[in-house]
Image 1: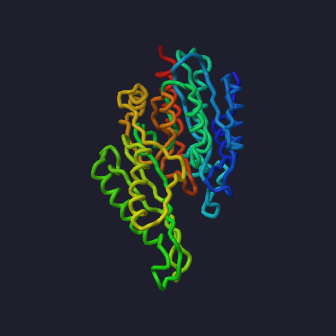
Image 2: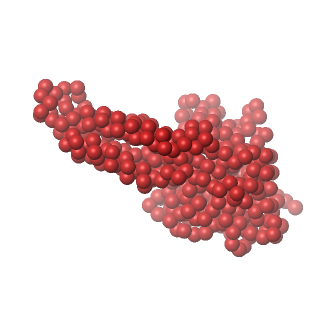
Image 3: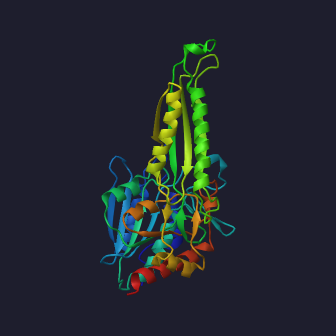
Length: 385
């Protein structure tokens, strides 16, 4: 019987050759429609029911839902189709040409995480002629690396997709059931500029920001005293003051100042509560200095994740990999899938150390192991009565 889709290496090659960079900078941002078209074509050819979803307000950005089998429940194999931008001058291989060298496959998205889709397709080939007790869904999303618009659109639609999910982010073949959240915020103070020779002529936003930074660092200490989870390599929530800009000249009192920060909360800490507390602390300092102030999210943020250790998808992933499900500091689309009722495990063949790096690669020896893991998960969660 002829193979109904191209060979695995051809699937990988075509995915890597199709640019799908997403970025908060319009100069780098691209659509993902080319990758979605590839996946939809292959999966339709295999007999899956495919649905391409345009994302309102994001031209050229799409999600794909492809389903094998019928009924409620089942397993979703999920991932994002976009990559981060790349440093062209720092790559020694063409980012868009799949290159095999010394047991590795180099290319942008091999590890994070377009390569996962080729492996998922390879795994599902074994079930095309087998009746499934519950459906298998392949979900491909847009813009995980920037706006999260694909996952947000799915969560807002509220459409059930299945009961369990595997997200193929790079975890080195070790299952992950917990991750920290991500909150990136801007704090802006507005004072009054004036001649530096007389402080009474202005109101320094920069000096106010100095105190705001102190208040935020004191808040960080409070958070770390009260929240700790030894499952994480960094067991406490982190808060990083990553960017500050204010004023324009040393002989002018600074009229405006803006700070950007990154907060990584643990499971059980919620973004709305954290934003409210941050705003209250900023307000106290700003008002004491007679400064106007505002805060805004730099992106919608990602809630922390904790999938119950007793969930069948966690137990299946642990049994098949031989590893206890762990915890990581990076965020994923899992909280959006959780909002749709999906118990979710993050499990992929790549390594997070390769993500967002020049000469990103996927080790060849990981490929058959990942395909076998996916087939085992499908057999347990979809094929078994």
